[in-house]
Length: 316
Picture 1 (cartoon, rainbow, N blue to C red):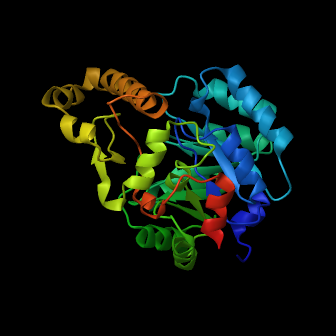
Picture 2: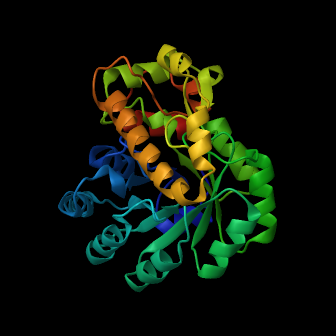
Picture 3: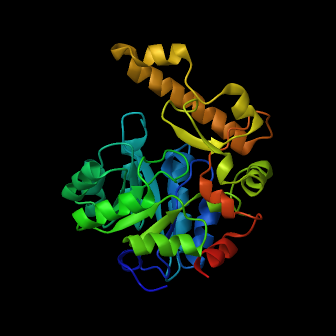
């Protein structure tokens, strides 16, 4: 693959970021990603304590290789009460980049840049992309309607081309990449690189159950559905029998509570907490309550493989 602005920004061989995935991403995955010549990223919320986060950063710094890069994802809105302390630890210990999601990245950009850390911001439209560019973001991660988890509304082509023509910072495409042809397509649209998540769920190193990994092999793009039952925000999951049983729409009482101005914030926080706990149980334990987050790019997942093999399949 030819060098791009992303490979130059992160000093990596291939223009790929192993996307941060709640409960899935871990140090072992990112180590293997760096060894394979790409960047890896972990949600800071995957660590219950700041000391665990600090230990993960130090382990990745010790394992870093030439041509590899690592970062962490921060949820930067008020629902993440750990945000400020997590940002402080990241700036103290150091990493190559931070990816911000679900809120204003202004504070993160200012503090991270002081620590020599690059900041990439998740965006789903041009309006927010212009805001993060004005705040000093180093790149925009264009989350399209083929992404896993919380996705955007625009197609990869529409979103990338829109941002490419209006922004001066690099655009990294997130969503819809499961093979080399998909990467080439995103680069041809104008992206400087891609963020790839779902294909890495079925990796040997992923810290989830074998059932979750095997589901990504057994199910395909047509089995991905949107649900409002996890966090209140539409999220893509595998359409397991359990998901079919509980349905994908919010209940009438949830909708009613969401319309109450005074209660809305607290209801959303409680629903997010309950939903994340259910997702954690499905990902980490043997349970019939299988709520497995994934995107349509699992269509290309045919076996549980080491991270290095998944990267090789993506770039060859």
